Amino acid sequence: MLKIYSIKKSNLKQLPKSFGNLKNLKELIIEKSNLKQFPGFNCPLISLKKLYLKNNETKHLNKSIGEFNNLKLLDLKNNKLESLPASIKNLKKLKFLFLGNNELRILPESIGDLSSIRSLDCSNNKLKNLPKSIGKLNTLRFLTVNGNELNHLPSEIGDLTSLQILDLENNPLEEIPICIVKLRDLENLYLKKTKIGKDKKLVKELYRNKTPKLKIDAHYYFPSWKLN
Image (cartoon, rainbow, N blue to C red; front, side, top):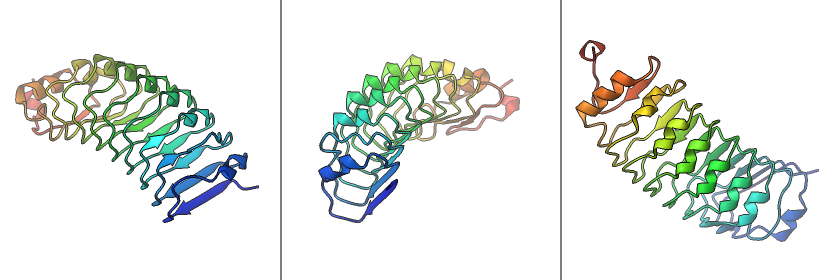
Protein backbone atom coordinates (compact mmCIF):
# COMPACT_ATOMS: atom_id res chain seq x y z
CA MET A 1 0.00 0.00 0.00
CA LEU A 2 1.99 2.98 -1.33
CA LYS A 3 1.74 6.11 0.86
CA ILE A 4 4.74 8.22 -0.24
CA TYR A 5 5.94 8.67 -3.82
CA SER A 6 8.98 10.74 -4.80
CA ILE A 7 10.28 11.75 -8.24
CA LYS A 8 13.33 14.01 -8.49
CA LYS A 9 15.53 15.18 -11.34
CA SER A 10 13.51 13.52 -14.07
CA ASN A 11 12.15 14.56 -17.46
CA LEU A 12 8.58 13.91 -16.39
CA LYS A 13 6.34 16.39 -18.21
CA GLN A 14 3.00 15.00 -17.13
CA LEU A 15 1.78 12.46 -14.61
CA PRO A 16 0.80 9.10 -16.09
CA LYS A 17 -2.91 8.39 -15.74
CA SER A 18 -2.10 5.40 -13.56
CA PHE A 19 -1.47 7.88 -10.73
CA GLY A 20 -5.22 8.18 -10.42
CA ASN A 21 -5.26 4.67 -8.96
CA LEU A 22 -3.07 5.55 -5.96
CA LYS A 23 -6.03 6.02 -3.65
CA ASN A 24 -3.97 5.62 -0.45
CA LEU A 25 -1.14 8.01 -1.36
CA LYS A 26 -0.48 10.51 1.46
CA GLU A 27 2.54 12.40 0.15
CA LEU A 28 3.66 13.13 -3.40
CA ILE A 29 7.01 14.76 -4.21
CA ILE A 30 7.91 15.83 -7.75
CA GLU A 31 10.94 18.13 -7.74
CA LYS A 32 13.51 19.35 -10.24
CA SER A 33 11.67 17.79 -13.15
CA ASN A 34 10.08 19.27 -16.27
CA LEU A 35 6.48 19.00 -15.13
CA LYS A 36 4.51 21.50 -17.24
CA GLN A 37 1.11 21.22 -15.59
CA PHE A 38 -0.52 19.39 -12.74
CA PRO A 39 -2.21 17.03 -12.69
CA GLY A 40 -2.94 17.31 -16.40
CA PHE A 41 -6.04 15.10 -16.14
CA ASN A 42 -8.71 14.33 -13.58
CA CYS A 43 -7.08 12.18 -10.91
CA PRO A 44 -8.17 13.33 -7.47
CA LEU A 45 -5.81 11.64 -5.04
CA ILE A 46 -8.40 11.62 -2.29
CA SER A 47 -6.02 10.66 0.54
CA LEU A 48 -3.19 13.04 -0.40
CA LYS A 49 -2.14 15.39 2.42
CA LYS A 50 1.19 16.79 1.21
CA LEU A 51 2.04 17.79 -2.34
CA TYR A 52 5.53 19.07 -3.20
CA LEU A 53 5.94 20.39 -6.76
CA LYS A 54 8.78 22.88 -6.32
CA ASN A 55 11.57 23.49 -8.83
CA ASN A 56 9.70 22.40 -11.95
CA GLU A 57 8.49 24.12 -15.13
CA THR A 58 4.84 24.19 -14.11
CA LYS A 59 2.84 27.03 -15.67
CA HIS A 60 -0.69 25.85 -14.93
CA LEU A 61 -2.63 24.00 -12.27
CA ASN A 62 -5.57 22.02 -13.55
CA LYS A 63 -8.86 23.02 -11.92
CA SER A 64 -9.10 19.46 -10.61
CA ILE A 65 -6.59 20.47 -7.91
CA GLY A 66 -9.70 21.57 -6.03
CA GLU A 67 -10.72 17.93 -5.71
CA PHE A 68 -7.74 17.08 -3.50
CA ASN A 69 -10.00 17.53 -0.50
CA ASN A 70 -7.60 16.32 2.21
CA LEU A 71 -4.59 18.36 1.13
CA LYS A 72 -2.89 20.18 4.02
CA LEU A 73 0.34 21.33 2.36
CA LEU A 74 0.87 22.54 -1.21
CA ASP A 75 4.40 23.58 -2.21
CA LEU A 76 4.68 25.22 -5.64
CA LYS A 77 7.85 27.26 -5.13
CA ASN A 78 10.22 27.95 -8.02
CA ASN A 79 7.94 27.27 -10.97
CA LYS A 80 6.48 29.43 -13.74
CA LEU A 81 2.93 29.72 -12.48
CA GLU A 82 1.05 32.65 -13.98
CA SER A 83 -2.27 32.09 -12.23
CA LEU A 84 -4.17 29.88 -9.81
CA PRO A 85 -7.49 28.21 -10.62
CA ALA A 86 -10.54 29.48 -8.74
CA SER A 87 -11.15 25.90 -7.63
CA ILE A 88 -8.36 26.27 -5.09
CA LYS A 89 -11.11 27.56 -2.78
CA ASN A 90 -12.21 23.96 -2.28
CA LEU A 91 -9.05 23.04 -0.36
CA LYS A 92 -10.76 23.59 2.99
CA LYS A 93 -8.12 21.64 4.95
CA LEU A 94 -5.09 23.39 3.42
CA LYS A 95 -2.81 24.89 6.07
CA PHE A 96 0.37 25.70 4.15
CA LEU A 97 0.52 27.23 0.67
CA PHE A 98 3.93 28.08 -0.78
CA LEU A 99 3.91 30.08 -4.04
CA GLY A 100 7.28 31.85 -3.89
CA ASN A 101 9.35 32.52 -7.02
CA ASN A 102 6.70 32.22 -9.70
CA GLU A 103 5.14 34.58 -12.27
CA LEU A 104 1.88 35.35 -10.46
CA ARG A 105 0.34 38.75 -11.22
CA ILE A 106 -2.90 38.26 -9.30
CA LEU A 107 -4.36 35.99 -6.65
CA PRO A 108 -7.94 34.81 -7.20
CA GLU A 109 -10.64 36.20 -4.92
CA SER A 110 -11.43 32.58 -4.08
CA ILE A 111 -8.23 32.39 -2.05
CA GLY A 112 -10.24 33.98 0.75
CA ASP A 113 -12.13 30.70 1.11
CA LEU A 114 -9.10 28.77 2.40
CA SER A 115 -10.64 28.52 5.83
CA SER A 116 -7.80 26.55 7.49
CA ILE A 117 -4.77 28.35 6.02
CA ARG A 118 -1.98 29.22 8.45
CA SER A 119 0.93 30.14 6.20
CA LEU A 120 0.79 31.85 2.80
CA ASP A 121 4.04 32.58 0.96
CA CYS A 122 3.74 34.63 -2.25
CA SER A 123 7.26 36.06 -2.21
CA ASN A 124 9.09 37.05 -5.41
CA ASN A 125 6.20 37.16 -7.84
CA LYS A 126 4.68 40.04 -9.84
CA LEU A 127 1.68 40.83 -7.65
CA LYS A 128 0.45 44.41 -7.95
CA ASN A 129 -2.30 44.05 -5.36
CA LEU A 130 -3.89 41.59 -2.96
CA PRO A 131 -7.55 40.58 -3.20
CA LYS A 132 -9.92 42.06 -0.63
CA SER A 133 -10.99 38.53 0.23
CA ILE A 134 -7.64 37.99 1.94
CA GLY A 135 -9.22 39.57 5.01
CA LYS A 136 -11.38 36.46 5.40
CA LEU A 137 -8.36 34.30 6.30
CA ASN A 138 -8.86 34.50 10.05
CA THR A 139 -6.60 31.48 10.70
CA LEU A 140 -3.63 32.98 8.81
CA ARG A 141 -0.52 33.41 10.96
CA PHE A 142 2.26 34.03 8.44
CA LEU A 143 1.90 36.17 5.31
CA THR A 144 4.95 36.67 3.12
CA VAL A 145 4.64 38.91 0.06
CA ASN A 146 8.14 40.37 -0.16
CA GLY A 147 9.65 40.96 -3.59
CA ASN A 148 6.48 41.87 -5.48
CA GLU A 149 5.09 45.05 -7.08
CA LEU A 150 2.62 46.05 -4.36
CA ASN A 151 2.07 49.78 -3.90
CA HIS A 152 -0.88 49.50 -1.53
CA LEU A 153 -2.71 46.98 0.63
CA PRO A 154 -6.47 46.46 1.01
CA SER A 155 -7.87 47.71 4.31
CA GLU A 156 -9.28 44.20 4.82
CA ILE A 157 -5.79 43.06 5.76
CA GLY A 158 -6.58 44.56 9.15
CA ASP A 159 -9.09 41.72 9.63
CA LEU A 160 -6.34 39.08 9.85
CA THR A 161 -6.80 38.64 13.58
CA SER A 162 -4.46 35.62 13.89
CA LEU A 163 -1.58 37.15 11.93
CA GLN A 164 1.81 36.91 13.66
CA ILE A 165 4.29 37.74 10.90
CA LEU A 166 3.77 40.08 7.93
CA ASP A 167 6.65 40.43 5.46
CA LEU A 168 6.22 43.33 3.03
CA GLU A 169 9.89 43.92 2.21
CA ASN A 170 11.05 44.96 -1.25
CA ASN A 171 7.76 46.36 -2.56
CA PRO A 172 7.03 49.91 -3.82
CA LEU A 173 4.55 50.38 -0.95
CA GLU A 174 3.67 54.00 -0.24
CA GLU A 175 1.20 53.41 2.57
CA ILE A 176 -0.39 50.69 4.67
CA PRO A 177 -3.61 50.65 6.68
CA ILE A 178 -2.70 51.84 10.19
CA CYS A 179 -4.99 49.16 11.61
CA ILE A 180 -2.31 46.57 10.80
CA VAL A 181 -0.09 47.61 13.69
CA LYS A 182 -3.02 47.21 16.08
CA LEU A 183 -3.52 43.51 15.34
CA ARG A 184 -3.13 41.98 18.77
CA ASP A 185 -1.23 38.85 17.65
CA LEU A 186 1.12 40.55 15.17
CA GLU A 187 4.73 40.15 16.35
CA ASN A 188 6.87 41.08 13.33
CA LEU A 189 6.29 43.58 10.53
CA TYR A 190 8.99 43.79 7.85
CA LEU A 191 9.15 47.00 5.80
CA LYS A 192 12.72 47.22 4.50
CA LYS A 193 13.17 48.33 0.89
CA THR A 194 9.73 49.94 0.74
CA LYS A 195 8.83 53.61 0.39
CA ILE A 196 7.22 53.34 3.80
CA GLY A 197 10.51 52.27 5.34
CA LYS A 198 12.11 55.47 4.05
CA ASP A 199 9.33 57.74 5.33
CA LYS A 200 10.44 58.80 8.82
CA LYS A 201 7.13 60.44 9.64
CA LEU A 202 5.06 57.41 8.68
CA VAL A 203 7.33 54.92 10.43
CA LYS A 204 7.16 57.05 13.57
CA GLU A 205 3.35 56.97 13.37
CA LEU A 206 3.43 53.19 13.04
CA TYR A 207 5.61 52.92 16.14
CA ARG A 208 3.27 55.13 18.14
CA ASN A 209 0.17 53.14 17.22
CA LYS A 210 1.57 49.63 17.43
CA THR A 211 0.82 47.05 20.11
CA PRO A 212 3.56 46.60 22.76
CA LYS A 213 4.81 43.22 21.46
CA LEU A 214 5.06 44.23 17.80
CA LYS A 215 8.55 44.59 16.32
CA ILE A 216 8.80 46.75 13.20
CA ASP A 217 11.81 46.22 10.95
CA ALA A 218 11.98 49.32 8.75
CA HIS A 219 14.65 51.48 7.14
CA TYR A 220 14.89 53.65 10.23
CA TYR A 221 15.06 52.82 13.92
CA PHE A 222 13.47 55.12 16.45
CA PRO A 223 14.64 54.80 20.08
CA SER A 224 11.70 54.69 22.48
CA TRP A 225 12.63 58.06 23.98
CA LYS A 226 12.04 59.71 20.60
CA LEU A 227 8.55 58.30 20.34
CA ASN A 228 7.13 59.79 23.53
